[in-house]
Image 1 (cartoon, helix red, strand yellow):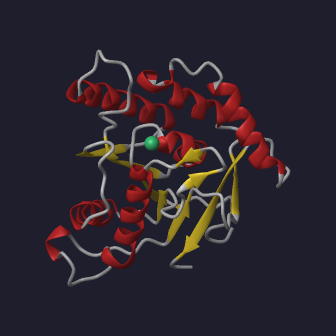
Image 2 (tube, rainbow, N blue to C red):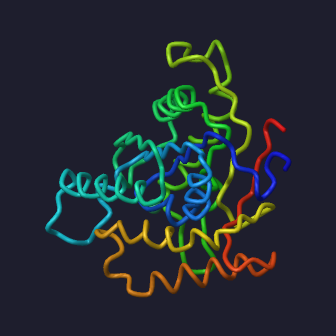
Length: 236
Ligand SMILES: [Zn+2]
């Protein structure tokens, strides 16, 4: 099958998201499917979600510890090999050169063909939600690290030999062009989300919501359950 087809699976992939659980909501059905097929995946967490609670029993430090533990367990459920925590502060993530350079270092070290990230242009979700600014910052930094930074020999040579990412799988609602069948891994997606106890234990309707959303996404292509992406094909 051709590169970037729905059934194509690269040997190496990386996810770059702002908070623990972002990756699970965005693309974990696909990740579990790819991992099962032998893809070696690295999950990069720009923050450890250290202010993501209304529960006053936590401090920033204790919440960070809990959420990293939850994230590692979720990675294990999905078959994700590596997790990298950059530990920027939650709610204050900025797509600056420090963050971009850290991402360049990881892209050059792990050499993924595919990078998954969010959509830096997504400010609103429908008519009643605002996208978290950390999500936009992580997405911007990810894309700017992939291009032009990681492949430029003269840019930060001390961060390792250059690497060219082949494609970016953007989780978005616009210009979506690739549907991935997650029928066999939907249960793993839900199980991985359930590892984020500090975030989702109160969310009783979570499983139903994920099933419904995945079914709605799949319907357009005659799939029982799917995730979809805008795939930016940098290297065909
Ligand atoms: Zn988030």
